[in-house]
Amino acid sequence: MKRGRASTALVAATLAVAWGFTGVAAQAHPDQHGTPDGHLLGTGSEGDLQLLGKADLTDGDDIIADVGIDPRGTYAYLAHWGKPTCAANSEAGGATDPDAGVFVVDIADLENPREIGFIPHSQDSRPGEGVQALNVSTKFFNGTMLVTNNEQCGPQGKGGVSLYDVSNPHKPKKLSDHFGDRGFADSNEIHSAFAWDAGAKAYAVIVDNVEFPDVDILDITNPKRPRLIAEYDLNDFDVDQPEIGLTSSFIHDMVVKQINGRWIMLVSYWDGGYVQLDVTNPAEAQFLGDTEYAAIDPELADPTNTQVPDESRSLPPEGNGHQAEFTNDNRFFIGTDEDFAPYAVGEFLIATGDNAGAYPSVSVGGAASVTELPDRRLNGPTVYVGYACPDSAPVPPAPALSLEPGEELIAVVQRGPVGDPSASEGACFPGQKADQAIAAGYDAVVFVNHHAGEAASPDAPFCGSGAFTQPVVAVCTTHDAFHKLFDSVSDAYPEANPALGQVGHEVDVDAVFDGWGYVHLFDAATNEDLDTYAIDEAHDPAFASGFGDLSVHEVATDPNDSSRAYLSYYSGGMRALEIQCTDPADTSTCELVETGKYLAPEGNDFWGVEAFTRDGETIVAGSDRDDGLYLFSTNR
Image 1 (spheres, one colour):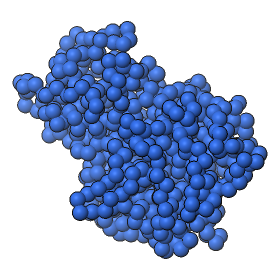
Image 2 (tube, helix red, strand yellow):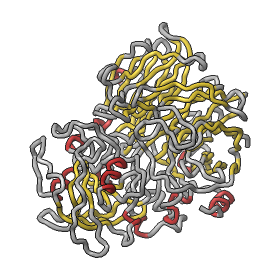
Image 3 (tube, helix red, strand yellow):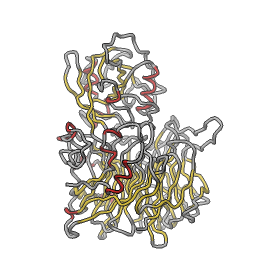
Image 4 (spheres, helix red, strand yellow):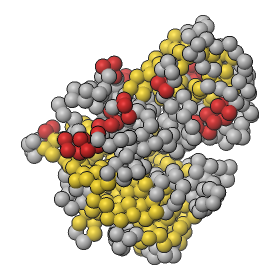
């Protein structure tokens, strides 16, 4: 069966182009991006997605995150999330960008959008995934409200949600700041937020990065005094699928929409898939159902894609349910699975010692694959180097061990620290840890889950991702495997970690191609997975490195056309899709077909996408991480 591939003309044109998270709940990675190692190059607009105008907001790369459009369709809000440390970007001889916050852009003239202001966030706190502007009308507030998330990227960072009155976008007013689980002062950091006006009351749902239950719902009827009214752990409904290796089940994103008189929350729950909740009464949400991942990855098993190696065709899917939206008629919803690792870890072996054998393992988002090594294997002795954050105990220098030809000296690094009384410093991203290890003379990194993370998700090899500044080969395994590497197994906690610099057993790891993240079409009534779509390069090993991140990120469905949707596809550009059905009455005959795209000649890196209405026509806004705001028409 054809799985929603791009049209023949667009495929031909494309192929002709040269080319930590750190908390207990094992949440989505705050820095969600791979190593900036090049771009897929394009030819501009094709099909029914035509560039109208753009606003360059920064000359620094990886600065822009999410985009939100106000209900009038005349202002755009773009997250400036700064560098991994939240510091301003200042290059010698170049412009200096502000610290993290939100750009305000006037888009009344779609061909000439212009920045009119900037809303700074608190020190060491940055918005990223959750930027939304909506109308709210309660007895306490009547106007346009801007909602943003807060993630910590420095010692003074604060979490929670921030609410602003942007009824006059030229003069934003703060309503409340950093509210979330545990109140104001020390709220847990949150990865995303979504608010809705339910009439007399208004609510917001936020992603709790730190703990389960992780679906936190706030009453924001009085936005100056938000209240936490409910917390849910959707794993209570058995949404994960451990039988096919999908064990990292946690909230990443969500939308809420009124459907047939009920308020329905569509939750993207990573390896748990996509979950529907009735939140008409948010304090007593009702579980409605969830999607199931196929036992075999449908894109890899696609017989029409002759580029996929035979050994890949029986692999399970990655999971990674990232973000989803209902179509305009609520008949379908479209979900995006985000995956930055085109190679899965094959078999992770402890090769020597009493605990020799295979252990669970996964790739690390943003790290280089094992296939980047000359022999396509990561093998050699291991050395424990601690947490390896900038404020951690110094990474011990690489010892002078004798290596066989083709072997690497491998640093073993723990995720965190979280809840370790022997390490009070703040946690950091895997990329920051990798920098410390490479600087100390190691060749590659094995990341291991920390004790608290494994307690929350037993045997789950989750180590976070992001903030890689160089191509470091790395894989992730479990906390149990960590102790067995160093013969330090202990059921007590705090455990006796190996000594810094202790040499462990040898490991041997290979990899297998499994492609980048892609898109699903679901029947909203049954949660049945009807079709998948990916750009062709995403499932071609020739594009596994050197062309940027070829994973899908977000989807926006068309507010005026129930068959249309738009994708921000990182280095794959902006894509327009149409739901086409052989039998309009039978959803099982429906598939996703690409009808247009935009990819600049020098390439793009699109993070966010929003679709809105102007003069009866659909306009698409995209946020490019390196540039700023792009605006597209969708005339067909």
